[in-house]
Length: 406
Image 1 (spheres, rainbow, N blue to C red):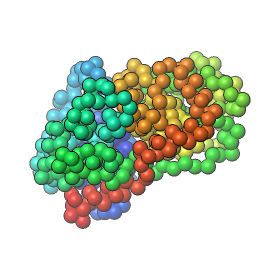
Image 2 (cartoon, rainbow, N blue to C red; image 1 turned 135 degrees about the vertical axis):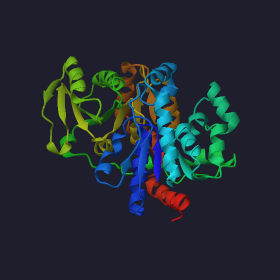
Image 3 (spheres, rainbow, N blue to C red; image 1 turned 120 degrees about the vertical axis):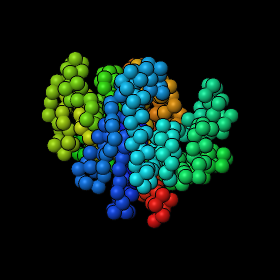
């Protein structure tokens, strides 16, 4: 089976599903083709020998968000997006002719590519949810358009999902699946893989005296570096009696050097982490603020937080899905701009709130930390919108049944 996915969040979901497919059917040969970026999330599975990454890849200037702005689209076109897509499309066709079943994860692009191959395929639609237009004021032209259709998915996407060769259509929530069912699409909502492997955890004794805020600046540089500076500026304005531990969870990007240069500019000094058990790569201190930077610590640190401040996509949704409310701070992009932040807030029922400035971020964060009832209320909304864990195993069973006849 070949899995085609387009984006960092889609890569993460693909990995969770592939892990379960491999666990349920170890003999099945599994390949993955990331359409956007290098697909580094798959590195460990590839090293372990049960997954193969194929195809040409490129780090596009927009980071896969060319649909967010004309500037991003033009930059991607200049960087060779048409030639890259042509190569990927040809490779998918070759793998289909070799007898592989295909699974698309994402939106129109991977769905169109697997449909055009002529092979049997399945589709996991991850980025679109009817919550984004059924929550909130609903006065924008796009809201009216989606209401007219009764779904955030578009008619040309319905056609690809209705095709006889499409054996599985899975959505991220029941509301979206029901919207598609009204258009004669056999859509299911077996669960959201994004919540698998995440859980709240006991707070380490070394952080017991601290208020705990998780900071998620994203993974695309230089945008993530700019957003880290702005988020840190907002949190730094806090005035509380207790120490505040700012848990900065990053992946391979941005680098420690890039973040530490900003910390020096904001008058932080390097210190020692309060405990080796935190797995912090660096610790910086200024007054009552303790900034811990952890590389690939998100799954551990997310469960310790009381609130989050974020300019990230998938990780923010996962944090809110744990019942931890968050505040976002839209910037210049290309990813985390105001349209993206508003859509994310509506998707999550207001459990993440976009702020217009670092000053507003600090004020709202102060309210969250001072009001446990508000945190609990928003947390329950986020948990309902994201759903419980276990979706990957159910999706894997459906994939093996519908695509392979197991």
